[in-house]
Image 1 (cartoon, rainbow, N blue to C red):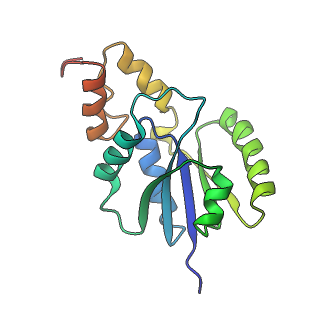
Image 2: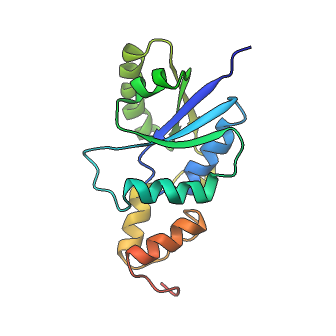
Length: 165
């Protein structure tokens, strides 16, 4: 039987507890998951690609059957290169679906043998977004509980937030 491989693409700037939850749940469905850090020319990132890669490896690197990497191409092309049969996308709300559905149709045209699999955010993570986390931190507040501890510490350093923040 062939190994089922799924790609979970995103900028992960920062990686949130919602992202971690999606990775763990996807690993229950697929033999291997590739968390693929995308470079998005439209997004101004808080962390460099190298910083995100290193921090994510610190958080998730010990998980079996999880590969952590990055890519500079279209997601569909990356999936073909990695012999993936699925793209994992997390959905928080109906608004996410409209955007993600449009992208899934484009990916299907570019890579007909790759399916998009939508995983709903668990209720405790349904309101967390990387953008929201960065906005909270910009105002000097800790984002503990929204991101893994390693990312919280890194965000606090970026925004020069003290522990009481």
